[in-house]
Image 1 (cartoon, rainbow, N blue to C red):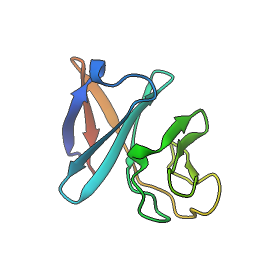
Image 2: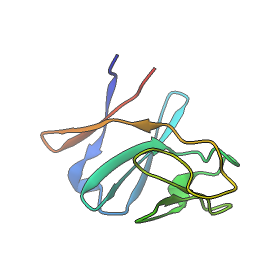
Image 3: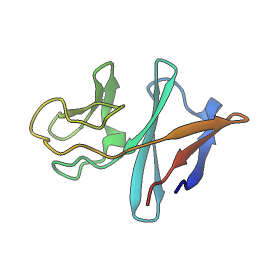
Image 4: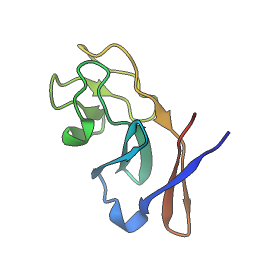
Length: 104
């Protein structure tokens, strides 16, 4: 079941900008890298750090606390200490509005 949530406009999301939004108990990070928009959990699976305060590069999103890197497309950690992947979410754009599918 799809549950599309309006997040922001395309113009609000510059390349490599990290934008966190909360939806009920979910904390989700949305970012754009090389003209692709990604939505991924915003809380590191290792130590509950907020990834919206981290760093983004071609490898993925780097946790600001212990520097684990998570792949933006799959959520899979690329290095220790994180071992558990993050949830990823589908993204769509309609009339310049970015929506994220919040899975149940």
